[in-house]
Amino acid sequence: MGGKIVKSHDVHVDSDYIKWVAELKQRYRSAQVKAAIRVNAEKLQFNWLLGRDLVRKKAEERWGTGVVEQLSLDLRREFPNADGLSARNMWYMKKWYCFYTRNGVDQILQQVVAEFGNEKLHQVGAELESSNFNQSSGRMPTIFAGIPWRHHVEIITKCKSVKEALFYIEKTIEQGMSRAALMNCIKANLYSHQGKIVNNFTEKLPDSQSKLVQEVLKENYDFGFATVGHEIYDETELEEALTKKVTDLLLEMGTGFAFVGRQKEVVVGGRSRKIDLLFYHIRLRCFVVCELKAKPFEPEYVGKLNFYVNAVDELLKAPEDNPTIGLLICSNIDSTDVQWSFRGLGTPMGVASYNNIRIKDALPSKELLEERMRLLQKEVHSTKRLIRKNTEKGKGQ
Image (cartoon, rainbow, N blue to C red; front, side, top):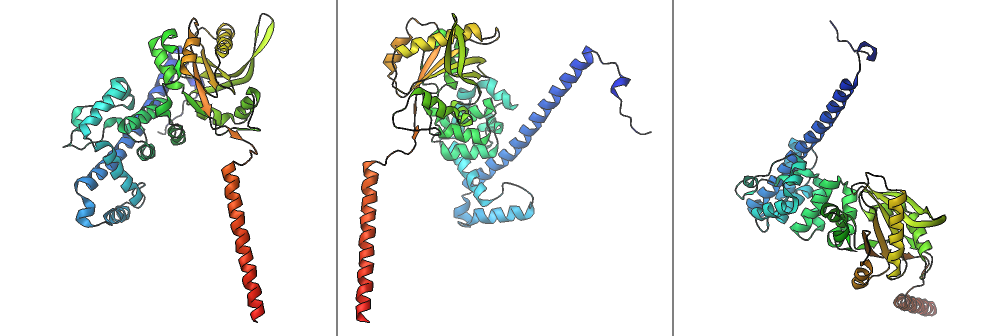
């Protein structure tokens, strides 16, 4: 007897059935994620052990400088449809192994546990045991299975220390970052900037929320994607330049930011006021009020931002949202000025700086003009010599 597809009118669908189906869907998704992690882990383990073999066997000394290229040919001949067996990739495998083992694998264990803790390690579906990290087994640290191979390549080629590398591994796992997003974080030097913004979050927010906010906000924002018309510009022009490229702005702000609007209107006491930029952060579960200043920090800026944060808390914040965060971005700041300005305020806020804004049709610098003049003079002299040479040649004939 053939199979039969049961139609929806052949069953009685009740709330228990709907709940059961929802649980099955979640269970299936979880199984898919775990399966993908296991596959990724096995591939990464192969890469780790191959890198280890190249180091331990002293392959280049033993079989010659072309051994990696030959190994690549031999393996690709046996596995023609396999990915990741190029000679270049194998050199990365060796570099990957060396990057983390130059000070001994046991130190990796200590740093991984210190950086991530058991809760985050469970996110990649694995238990960490000391035996997985000892020198004799040569096994890859299990936490590495949490991100794809190409992410690892970006990290080891651009990071200067194991601690920095672990920072980006953690961010990738926590936020599910694509390789493009990871590259943007590394380019923006998130490791150096994150957590250093001048703020009052410790005093105004619960510990868990305070730490999370400081991880999300940066002390300096790179606005190199935006262009203004002149060397001297105001907040309106800066704001317009940033919002013309909202995608780039959100990438620079960081993962989790959703753009709510520019010049967001709030009406207080019958009077309309407008917030420069308003965001909502998914992980923080709160609004982020952002005020832009094309000038160095002044204490009075904090008062205005404080007003807007309170207004959003009263008018837009839902009961399930966390307290609204204020973010002031100025062309330059003095931390002492900022800290003193925070005294007596009840709202959580931070003050950051920005740089690299581009100037459209800017006049060339004095040095550039001098260089252009030098090249022009050289070209003129060359042309004169050529004319003289041709003239003498014509007379000779």
